[in-house]
Length: 398
Image 1 (cartoon, rainbow, N blue to C red):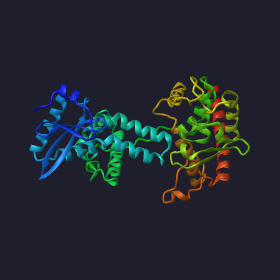
Image 2: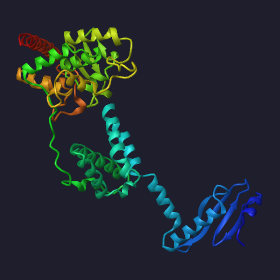
Image 3: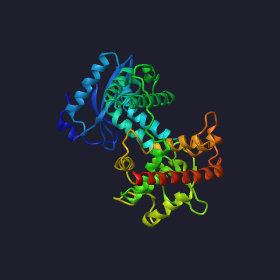
Image 4: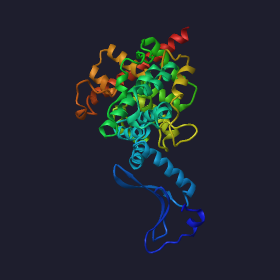
């Protein structure tokens, strides 16, 4: 006799497990503690099995019957409902997004905080909305190509290639952890438009560099931005390393800036000798931000560094267009001119925090060529002063 809601509500627990059958294997199991569980008894390949369908009253009599019917249809198709449920649960726990986040967490130990954040944001914007919920083992080459085509259509060919590389990293991690069998991103070789890497704009002619340094010296914007631009020129560190600099990293007795590994792109401590001019810039800033954490705080809050777009805006305000100069261009500017001036290429590369090709990363010496780099940076600062003063004279004579 089929069950009724009244009968279900009325049943009381006893010392033994009770089973109230509704028909066709569906029944309610009532434990001695009073737990009421829907179950479906069925046979698959000659073996009797039980499938849990939920707890009563969270799952009503009507819902239990619907679930039992769906399970029987699965059984009629020759599939074990219990095995099907395990597969669905497994797939739900192994979506592309979940695996990608695992991979990202593993890789972050090798990346700078800035690069790790940028990579996660790229996945959130461009990958997760399209294939994030797809079981990782079911992601196909056409799936990946379709989303990359959308990015190409926006004119972001470089981003499309970068995301293809990210997808491949995620899939290789899934293979290594036993949750995928192959990397579909590898099948996209030649499927994307070729990416011609553009060099970031930089001023390298001495006359132009002199005018730039003159413009920075006379910049009427904030002290923080002007000082950051000056340090970019004097140290040719990456802009993010400048922006996120903390006072605790500076040793004014030895005039050394120790940038910790977690803030470096290559995840290694980097020592930056400070010229007299760099120290003078920092001394002016100490009166402004020396009591806080960041050397270059945001004007909105001392607890965060200033925004990454401020430097590019300042360069444009000073009259240098985006195709002429950008914050990263200070590195190319210094590298080009120092090489032309005859300085040792290894000194320059170490100052840029580049690891030489073929050198084992584990034996990279963060202090290598420190005395030589210290002398080079002081002479570089003097050279920039000379170019700036010459530019000022030329401007005065115009």
